[in-house]
Image (cartoon, rainbow, N blue to C red):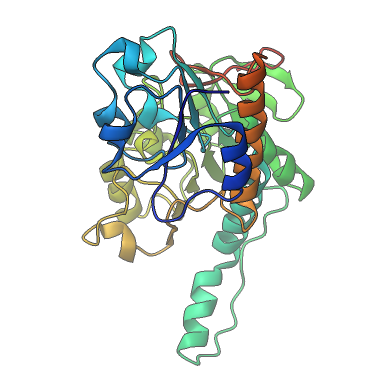
Amino acid sequence: MPDRLVVLYRGNRPPATGLIERLADTVYATEEELPYLLPGADALLAWVTITPAIREAWPDNPEKVPRWVHASSAGVDSLLFPALVEDPGVVLTNARGVYDQPTAEYVLGLILALAKDFPGTWEHQRRREWRPRPSDGITGRTVLVWGTGPIGRAIARLLRAVGMRVCGAGRKARTDDPDFGTVHGATTLPAALTEADYVVLAAPLTEDTRGMVDASVLAAMKPGARLINVGRGGLVDEEALIDHLAAGRLAGAALDVFGQEPLPARSPLWDMPGVMISPHTAGETTSEREALVEVFLDNLTRHIEGRPLRNVVDKRRGYVVDETRPA
């Protein structure tokens, strides 16, 4: 049994706390309490991950740091601070697998909403206006999914199932991928951007991907295309995106993540035509909390029994490496 497990939470504690407490000596900490409770802990469950609190509370004494940190999220960019990354004795795991299908369903919903202009329909309804008009179809439209991890693959499979043409973008180009068919690398990506009706961002935020969708990428996109971001806000140069949307080069965007969250009220994105904004909820479902705890409890049991943990993050790359699939 771990000497002490610290659970970082905000608002509500995780469900099934009784099961957790049976397996570990458990202490619950808010972000304000974490600096006092984290030193000397054997393990940390980061029920909250998008916060600077963990970095700020990380003990200076290497002997006082937790040896295992579990993130209740797929993205771990906020946890990849030097002291954690560079300590080979600290294992970082995440909630890989929980968000795959929910996020894919959300992306399909966003594509349908953009193509069918559901926001416009709801606005007309609110105004009691009867405005028949045609809408776009999605069958046969081309989607470039940028990010070939589990979430990107779930998106690709679902969009193929509804008749969309899907390709991917990743670190290694290939033409025989089981989910994407063609995966574009750096040399073929510009040409792929000119053909995509939708570009879906599902990549993790790392040093290699930060700001990858810049002004040059946006300029290379097909005129009238739409951008969907369910990855991380830092993947996109927001100012460049605003400029391209304002100029009418893109038909619209659906953005679930932003460089600063919550998105500031002063951001022009709130009022731009064709832009849909959601508060980082693409992967959230009513059963999400139970699924997250199930993954953690499995790893906690493995930790206690000395077995290999699931979803171990390569701290240098910033994501879990699946050796059975190309990146």
